[in-house]
Length: 191
Image (cartoon, rainbow, N blue to C red; front, side, top):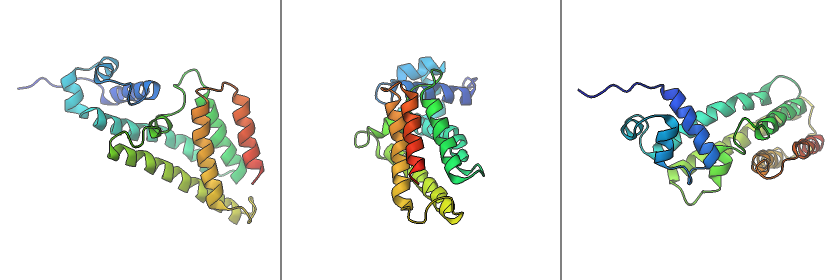
């Protein structure tokens, strides 16, 4: 009879998430994961699968983390204030010293074409999902008269998706949080 696995799977997944977030997919090795998660190699494979399977679980875990922020887009306040709340929370997280810079989705998307196609699909779905949500928020704002009817919802959604990932990426290199806030303010004012 085999030994029972005695560890907190959620905590181990959280540790793996932060490691992938900090180091990136390519620079994270199985040995790093074992050490950081505090589990054996056999427990890693038995509980999470190989590195690709673990990374997929981490991406799903990370998306749940990001949903809290996305809910700000539907906060019930006016459209522009909801967008500002979402982006300001994003900026706070990106410029926090308590979290790794950028995000797993943004960082990993730079590897598209070099990683497992099933992982690419998860990343692209996340991009498409956020763009769809932003477009929905813009459309609702237009219906409520909070955003001009002349605004091209598809173009604005794509623009804000780009802004979202640009802020995440630039937070690794540009330390001026106020510039990111100014860019958000300008983009929202232009609506």
